Length: 60
Image (cartoon, rainbow, N blue to C red; front, side):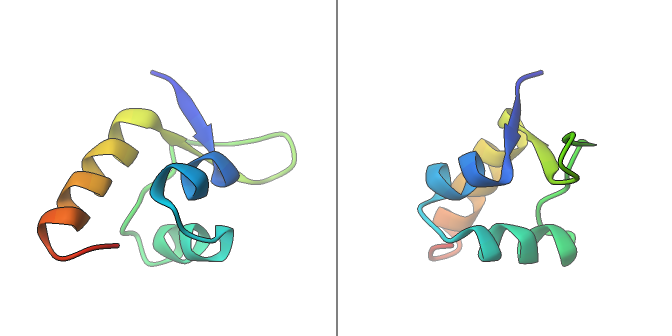
């Protein structure tokens, strides 16, 4: 399981970091762990599935 930081997820999805933090807060994208700096870490496969779902629903 490869983990991605909030910044990496934001870049992958093409959104701002604040948007990724909001997705986590609203439980639309679940974090798997916390980084040393306290930031969330996300499973790469979950992020890819979220991006596919969002695209089918009309965008992120």
